[in-house]
Length: 495
Image (cartoon, one colour):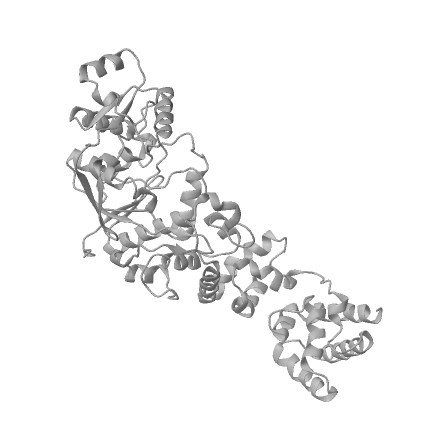
């Protein structure tokens, strides 16, 4: 069982090759929760050694995403710490030294094979229906010959020398022992010809030097997990606790979700990318609650804040089973957490969406709107179609919607005129003042509330669905409400 009284050092180590996505966010969250649960450290390490796929703005997006989600770093780029630097391209010398140390100890070897030769070997293996693998040519080189060729300027990589007999057992906290026959593990490149390491070396060296106690990472690394264990054991280092998280399945539950599913997952009102979800009006609390439960063995409808997750989190309770991405559950959690926000906080969060939509927002009006609309919001941007009319000078009601159900334009115009007469005679249009005489009119007229109030709603808000009617009229104000009602009468009389 995991000791939660012993401070853990964990890292989130993304590659800056694209947008931050749900899988990365969940990995970061679980690392963060475990660090906070144990009183340990949450570290960000940027694994940027794949320079061909490097995207310059991706690192900032990762930092922005973590900050927006509320996953505060203890160490990392821009934060500092005692184990930096925290970008792998700034740690080249350490990798060269450790790669050479493996060569000196007989656990690795320089490989001078050209890409052209390797391609020919691969083609021949495929022709023979063999699994592509390194054929061991340079593995047989003596150290003197290797040194001579390197001194002559031949380009080379360094490969790890995997034993060709026996097996390796690696232990995963969620999956138990994973045993692989060594003959099935390739002599992987650990240091490239440009002097930069591959993940297999860099991550192991960094985890050791940064004193990482638990490696909580994606399942994509499980296939090379035994290799990583071999490298650590070759150095004679203590192994961290290994946790390979469950994969995300596509929304329909079939097939692994990957960044290549971008176009499909970003259709409509959902996306797998954190930046997109923010722009779509999702809030950190809802996203974190949703992704936390995809792979954590607690009830799937548990509503938790980040602090509550920290209190309850247990590494041993994570599950190995794949989790289907269910955007309906995201909507559920997002709406639930929106309703938990205090009025001033919710007002501050929806204001940018009104501003982005071109509205001139008055804060005193905004704070009055929040209690009326919070129950109807699934995402923050739902405020625009639902409550944008509060900030419009004029509304443009659909003429057909001004006609009450079961009535014609003439009868609807008469109701609108009577409503105007009642409201204009009142000292103010607070909902306490307005609602009683309007309900009395409904009773006296024999009309339904839906008919009378429906006309008033469309006239004053410009839409058939709105926040509570009389509270909305109060916020719109007497002058503007009467102006809109008068315009509606003109429209109806002109039909």
